[in-house]
Image (tube, rainbow, N blue to C red; front, side, top):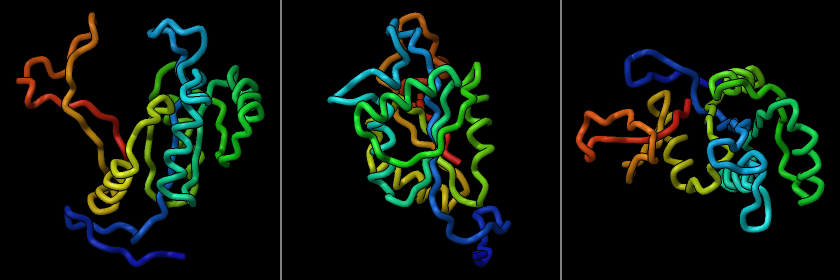
Length: 178
């Protein structure tokens, strides 16, 4: 059903309440951390990291649709892990992790076929709080988009800080949610 249009903060209109939707980027290789396998499959607290991430979003909203993007050469491995760990959370599996995160996101967004809010979340970030997820969806519903940010505690060795010209009190780190 169509929702009644309502005004945005900038005076334009958008559709009314939309069911949250979710998308996970999980196509990393783990090269930077020197792991033998991609980070999303490393076991933590008895199961692969990616399973914890999917469970976190399902705990936020049982009806949320999950779209997981993986490189084609990882699909069989992921399917085997789901059997091994009796993982039952339903999700749409998209083959097509790209060379860069942008292409994985683009491939996953092709599978969002109805209006709604879309969260783009890295599959190797399982510890996002339910409150942060809720606040981001609430802000995106109200303002049209949202991004959770934190004040970084430091820059990894050898990695330049994008905001190095700003005082530490004005540096922020985060990922987008649209």
